Image 1 (cartoon, one colour):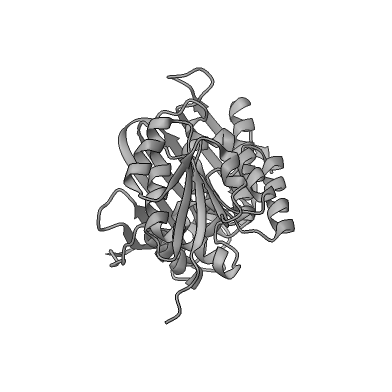
Image 2 (cartoon, helix red, strand yellow):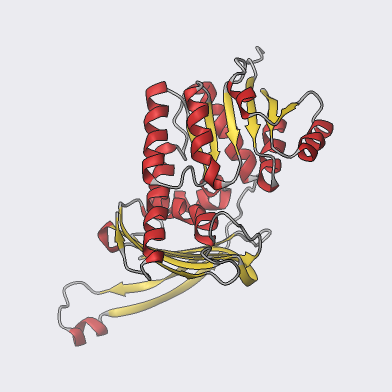
Length: 342
């Protein structure tokens, strides 16, 4: 069997989440993580001890100037994502950038245009699009098993990690916004958001957002890092069945509910219409899902797209759509929940 040439990558940002990315990329076959970049000397010393042969640097330009690197992984704080991703693309590198890919739609547009002009893969870390529980429900939705999807709502709350350069919505909502785009498969039209900053002035610790989609569909998101519970849950309501994805559950991550309302067609006036509604409450099914680490699947997908030239599932266009909704949500937060059209 002929062994393929390893894909050589570098990574900038080795913080809390960056360490997980480095671990997964390092463990992939036919991948060489060549360089790691961070501003903290003790962090670089630690990864150098853990990963023999990995060179470290505090200069991002060292990654840009390395002709052997085919891709760069960006796992820094959100405000740095755009500038680093733009520089990497201009240097001819494929880019994996953590969510959100940028802070404004204009920035996201520039990254998408640059990647397409350079014929480079631009992939955003929308992890749930690679999570086996979410892909299982996505397959059900697109097979028609849940029927027409009316709406979904999500809760992504816990106590900490408290960010200082982004609010809870910007930190947590990209996950569920990417899922809403995938599950509802409709164009987002407007966003309304409300929140409050209790711990740090001007940085909302809790936020609620509603995204209105074409066809009357909607997604409602509750995000907070100031909450007594750790909840990672998405509920999807269809006209045939309903699904709940609970990522905090260790095994039973998906529950399917054979519940709904059956309408007798043809009735127009209220009394007859009300009598024609039948509440259906059937079985609850807990499917067996072959769980694999979502981050490993996501990292492997990026490498595969570099190797084959395929378009990533969470490509720049997908990332841009999420940034557009986040930007609208920020404007709505500043205007006390007034809906902002996209």
